[in-house]
Length: 110
Image 1 (tube, one colour):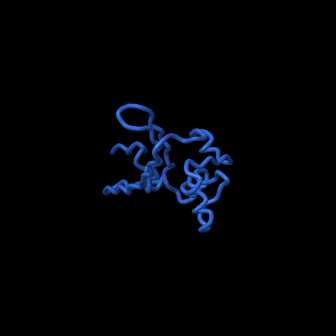
Image 2 (cartoon, one colour):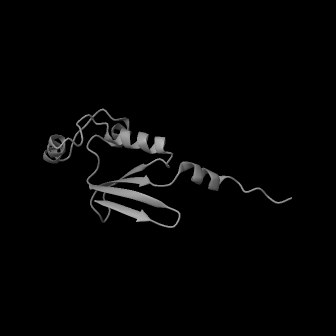
Image 3 (spheres, helix red, strand yellow):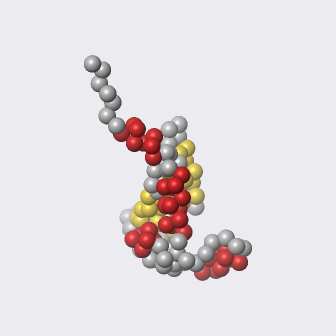
């Protein structure tokens, strides 16, 4: 499921997947180890020429976001509670420079 949220100053793409990462969040960020949750969907995308089985998807996303100058994506895994386990990847569509500028202390008038 993909949600695109947009506010006047903050836009983001949210991708939600049922269950937690099979290889673990740390390995997912590192890349190089692919363990698809649904091998048939992975095979379908490979046959269509989209996707690969190298485990480089998440590192590629982070690299592309960094090169584009956006705020770094986040990956959150949710366990238990009232909802089923899920993994949520949030891709902020906000320039990193803009956020850093807002965090700087404002100059005080003399």
